[in-house]
Image (tube, rainbow, N blue to C red):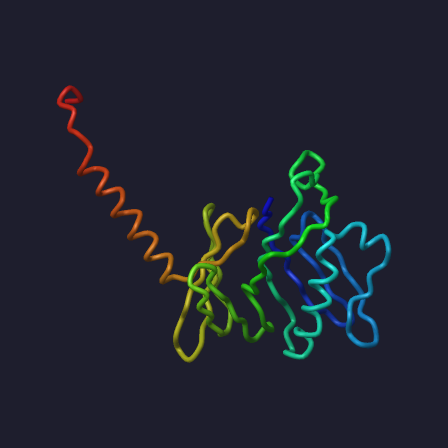
Length: 190
């Protein structure tokens, strides 16, 4: 079974801070090489695929000078895994099948990638707005503003760029209009 999830990783001083990870939020220290130091109890709290992901992401973030990364992950679990029961704790040999860095950068500069078209844009974040349905995340660069949208943040947190969002809205409007045209008119309604 595939689980769509995400993890927010922040590099703060000599440690990594994790957020939005199956209820786990915490700090993980770094060794002298800048790799994560996992205690035995921490490895028990983290999903089994997370140490490997962090061991790959940490050197990349350090070499790029990035202070945060928001990574969307598709994880394949065994059918018998408790992740999808009331227990909601992974007890299988889950494997990451797909991962995509959605937001990446520093406080001054951020890169966002659309989940639909894979287009990326780098700019200065700011002016975030939200409603009960979505969060708008604009980036500014050289007078240009490019917005990304996040719907249903607590389920998957996947980003969609404004171009793909406009196309999806137009597609849904045309489908609704087509349904209205093909629906028979009931004269008893009047």
